[in-house]
Length: 448
Image 1 (cartoon, rainbow, N blue to C red):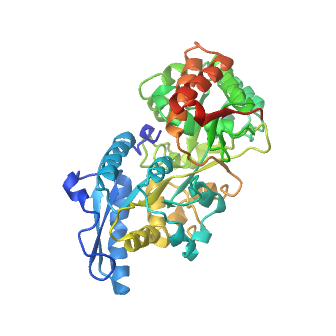
Image 2 (image 1 turned 90 degrees about the vertical axis):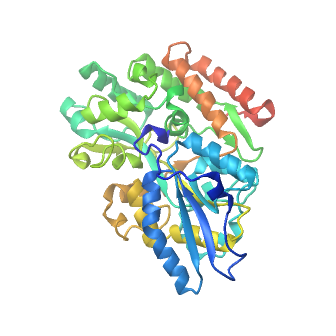
Image 3 (image 1 turned 180 degrees about the vertical axis):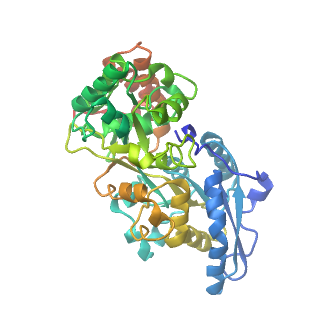
């Protein structure tokens, strides 16, 4: 759902297809000057990368290599960028290096569009400094790595501790969903309003799955994807349990149902009600500290660090947890004329000062050790604290077919929001829809 925030997609200076057609305009290999093309489609990211690229070119020059990077800056929503880059991959006209979210990678890797980075990373000492769970999330079903992550995020439940304290509601970590829902009822009873925003419904797009439903389901102990059979699990006790939680939240009017059915549901919830203290609990990721509620965010909350804190997601299987995910990652097109230089650029941007600059700009968490003490990231206390949860966080690597699963989840949760479905009907609708969208040979059921 990144479209839901001021992360809203971005960049300046649209270049024509002709400028993208040459993955590189210079001679093969590293015998002569090399020009690499790189695309960023969000303004905040392109600004951060543009700031450090001259240092990369200087570093290459010190190594006796003349490498120039032509940065292509665009301003496109996720879906439009995905369509455009797919067309460029198909035509063999993609830039040497791209930068996009982890969910895009499985499809592009499976289609043969991306360079296998595995042999490069195996020889790169820094790869061992990336946290194990982050490295694991990058491994595709064929056992290879096609993208280099340069940011991570954690998702938790943000809450207005100032509001809960004033209402006399406990701010301690809830250990079960019954505990959390009991507190949400206390809040709503005292305010007469909904108390939590959890992404759901079709208007929230992919966020209904990736920033809502998935986060809750990871605490049930049921699988969602079978790595052995490479099939999606569309019926399980965990899926039923998760739909039941959504039903209870909606039935008790703890969710802002009408707002979630609006065309841009994040606006009245995360950008209005939460900053005003009227919707005091929100499913959110680390980007919220900067993009949504920070001093330069969409709707700044004065005294943010004093007013807002986080809870892990309650679990029916183990301790409360944060959800970790890979943010954006660098990919090298399989058809690049300069794979060594392109990979070198991706590696350089994913280390030291360049990574620290980008993480601070986008409000992301370092996916590796050795960055916490590097300015300006060293001054980002909430991000550093969030990074400390990566070792125990739960995660779900992006898999082929995830877009279809997300669509089916969004439609099923909308059925609950509108009151047309109870949990059992929503679970069945999800299974049927997923089977139709993916094909019956791509799904299975589980009794765990």
